[in-house]
Length: 602
Image 1 (tube, rainbow, N blue to C red):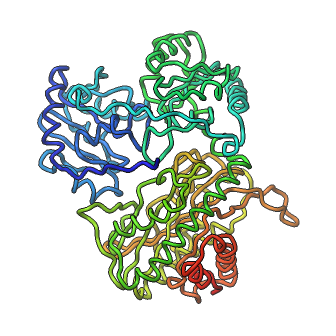
Image 2: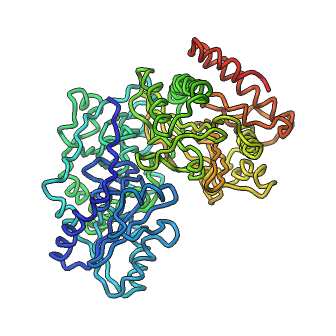
């Protein structure tokens, strides 16, 4: 069943829960407590039982933090959540601060002489190092706590840990059996001089063992941990209530299923071993526990990360099919906006619900891949805005509606953004949309040498905007999984340096944008898969190219034809011809007729 998100907008959370947390802090002699959004698995989306930040503050966004002191408190969010946090959090209790600019460390620097507690299961060692540095600067002390005072305060009212059944992901979708994957990982460990690796990212475990779960919304993850040895054997720590009758045989004899309570002793068993642990994926608790056990910890990337990012032929074929299905649903939505939506413009939540209904109608939607961004009018200028009951606006005539959405299907994960004119757009809107389109097309047609990173090609998506003194303040592309996370590393396309080359089989978004504060926003996003490019006559190096996975029309009413070169016009028309060829047979009736016009050449 597709999961739903229980959005809290009750600002009384803090007034009820903060006093309980402070009482539990006092019992442990603490002046303060760090409350990150992350849970024991460093998840983006959390089960209710692990959403400590939401319970403490009322804030339900997918990124943030809080610091609760004896006599004051602060909550930290990034630019995606500036509206939502003020709706959900009691500003009499919490000062609202920027998560990125200074963030929690800057606040800790203000707590002179305080003893501030932290749960080592919830903080990465690198993040903790920065916090300890800030505490030292303030003459404060960070103290590891067990139990977490927040968990003590939550007590019997805390929801139970999720126990969704863990099921096989068939080879028809996975394309490679777990034994072969574990053998590959084992060889990689040997090359790094490691005897074993500890895996704590649920996506890594789902991929390595070819399983999926349902412990969190938006991503089909089984919350669990694993120890994988260089010989390909593994110990998988999974709640027995999640284990289906078919699972042991699916995993095979080289994988032992064990209780989560046995994880600590299992780490102790690694005494004397060289153990690879990813400081970006695993909390400080693992590093502390392994070091105390006498293991040699090797800090390095989770060994499944890069193999998981490079999809095999079966995964790519499944993803293509998922995008055709999803594209047909999105096309029906775009037709609705282009017809009924011009007469009776929808509000943001109506648009979100309508698009979801079209995806539901496929009969194959397992979940959304993230909470839909439906942004009308000035909300479009907030790149990651999500409508709530209190912020919901109706699209005005002469405005733009930006919808960024995606679905989770057994064969693939989608993520697509389209910007639509409601009524007659202004010339400025059309010109700036065309600049964004030129950047999108430039990246989509690029040929680049093997070994090129996303940071080396990011400027291609921005050059048209730069030529008119414009830009956008987010990355151009993020990795995407296959019936896994919609945000997946290690690759990305962004200004920030990235040392991971774009390799064949990687899926990445192409999503330049433009945002005019308080007025409108524009973003055009397709998912692309990196493919080997045909040899260039006279060329000396192997090249890569992008193939569009997303198939849905782009609003031609927002395109200034004279701003496109002949190459861009041909490319745009070719994309729409492909959309019509592949999506047309899946869309009948009025929507099908509209699609023909929407995809007609410029």
